[in-house]
Image 1 (tube, rainbow, N blue to C red):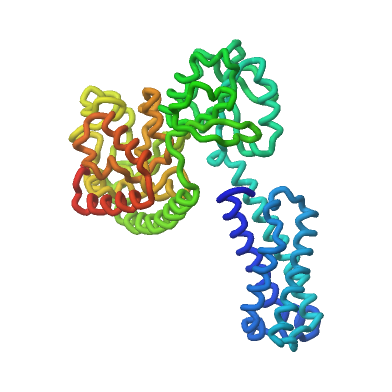
Image 2 (image 1 turned 90 degrees about the vertical axis):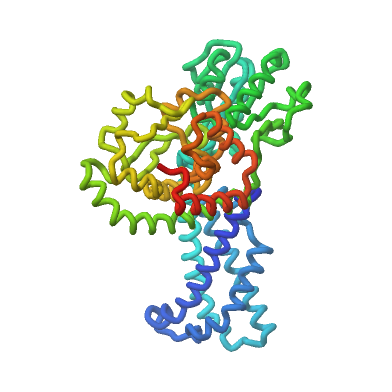
Length: 473
């Protein structure tokens, strides 16, 4: 385990192990009495008195004998042997601490033996469940990083074999662009060739791309700056092999390793993982509160929506999220049932210049729809999107698929951060803004200046805007 994610994994394992240790001590009295028919002096009161010693002993073992940095690499048998060894060390430390405290009257070998067996079994089960959960999490689509490899035919085979065999690339999905030959549709060592020199940038602008990994010979340097500029405009992180370093002194770059490859990272914005984790925790906590509010208000709003017009209570629409990922956004339905079909007939009355649609007195909006839009009640079901991880409480505005398909390269950078229920656009008089480029400007301002304090300020201003009904219609 490395970095912040490794620390979080260790903390979770520490919590699970402590839970297992404490539960096993509390179970000794019951097991010995009802199963072994032998009484040991480890009643609940005794265990509670020993709680400080138990916790201290385990923390000592965790700090000095811990091997959780190899947690995901251990097999089932290796995991069991590790837990047995850890518990033996734990018992030794507990014994030493009790001798130091001159509290040896509860040192019954039978009681400790029962605790040891129960703890080994319980800890092993918890470890295996947690390991399986982590593997499932890493396999899930939303957590996969899509790497777009840009290279030439002579380098492709070696790169493809390296990234598919190296464990550092676990959880990555790869697609390859071959610059010097037409190979689209072919597969190189398990990696599909998805584009060529002509459609390299257009592919990245339309498909899911998180990272662009460029490894090309020096003679291909002619267009390299343009490639990096365009990827950066789209909000895509660029990893360039160090052999291409000359001529890029003016770029904002960082030397790093992408798997075994030394690279220069060209990134629009690098966020601290600790702060991003806090942002996610804040999202989960806030979304749970929001869901409770949504369910309560929904009991009143839902019947009114159904009474006025037939159709679903919740409107579900396909939107575009982080780096081009599709997801379905949820809202209380505020329009008539066939609103999407009628939109085509109203495009001439669009009041926005650019990729968004907005219209005063939209005839598709129902009477109850006008009210829930004015009060922003229609947005409440998006708290479910936040809990799922598709959205954040604060972020950029998620575009529709039609808007996204008409994006220019620089528009995609607004998708380099998770979309939010609210953001700078929503608190800046959104209905007074009629130029899509202004929306993009506000979103990029948020991305470039993001901080936890900024999120808190936006949330507080959003609450003020909702209660004053400013900018909603």
